Image (cartoon, rainbow, N blue to C red; front, side):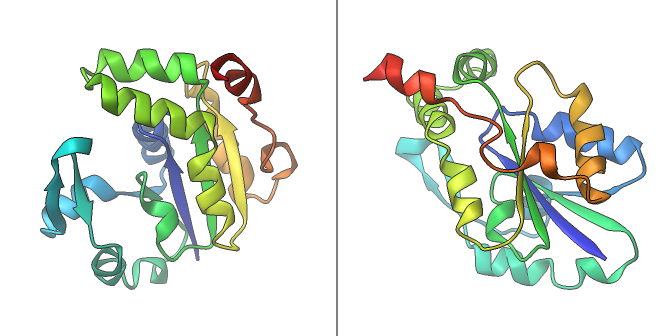
Length: 176
């Protein structure tokens, strides 16, 4: 049994990739829905327009998900904080990410926070700190190829997806 965390900055394509994985027959757990269904949402962090989540309680609510045969994919931007066998970080060029988040109607402060997090590799770094295998997939041009990429990773074909294959360093040069 393999439990995979599918994570990334909001807007990188997690939901779209998850839909494709479901259609391909994989068991996918939507962590946002799971959090709501199990009443795990904490207090509202108004300045950041987001809810806090107790990741220990979330982990406890997911105990045993890996006991069924086949790969299980946990989808959500908190998934890399949970117990898993591998982490896949979806990435998106900061300019494209900005456009995606603005089209969702996000407040400018929330757009800026997420674009900066993506440019600075925040989720990739957090994932790497877990000590688990970490892979990254660039979803800037869309997510149609990402389902096949996740399947490659599940099969152990990982060389193309090792950390460092996606780099937004030129964005930092523009900002500073």
